[in-house]
Image (cartoon, rainbow, N blue to C red):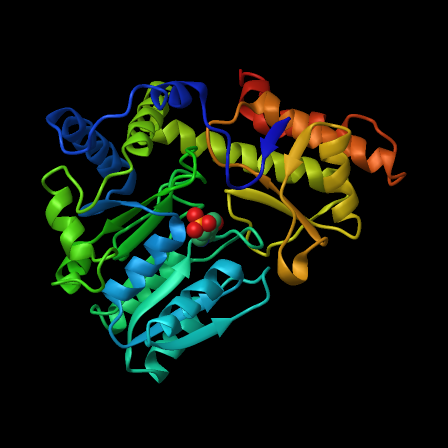
Length: 375
Ligand SMILES: *Cc1c(COP(=O)(O)O)cnc(C)c1O
């Protein structure tokens, strides 16, 4: 079975083997050396002033970001389940919340965020997904962050990059907190979350808020290559292994480039079958198709063709399917997935099978290789 869900994503063999080594005690020079190396690799990936690892899923990091960086009103963008979650976290902690809400195919605009900031002077933090996984869309986070900073540089910009960090280079010039989670683009089992912080964010954290998710205590400890509480040792070992694996396979630049090519080639291949890409601004993390037969296609992919893709949640249940693009995915695996979609459509009597998906994928993905030498 090919696992093509946008989280969890497949864990590469080298990473699984690294995590099969004996567990270390976390308060030892041996583990601290691993922690230090992992931090150094994370600084390259995040390009932020500080990075913090937490033993938690991504939602824990979202909560830590909100409680430590918002003291009054959180402006959050809800174009899907994960954006909605930021608002719920704020309210659960007694913070005020202003929400910009859209259908799940529609990204936020710079103008409406600017307008909301001007209309609500108590807003001291903004939370938004870079890639909103509910409908597979990309928000213009960098542009929004830049515009907000020109109005008030003190407003903290919290960017959920759980399906973006490891997918594309994020410009963090105006981002104060960039969040990643282990089981999405980082190709690890669930249970580890990472926050990249700006110097401004570290300053605002101050003494920190809360207990387990008190970022002040973690910043202090992690600068000494240890953690406030027991580190998720096995996952940290896995994180070092995947970051090393990415380096050995050509580095982050190649990973980002391959992901962009693959996402585009997949979308073109499926559109060539007459299918429709759901989001108005597709993220590179996943390919999302809305279709009347979404449920049947997804079921057939699994039962008849050995490809496991994700469906939709809430009002999009049975209406969309989502194919993962995150991670080190060989093009031949993605060809198998788009070909399986074409087979499923043939089985449903929607169109005759003629190999279109595979052909279009190859043409787009290997465009440069197929190009004739200019004389
Ligand atoms: C998966 C996901 C989350 C939640 O992460 P958990 O690890 O399930 O807590 C948050 N934001 C985005 C964009 C996600 O894709």
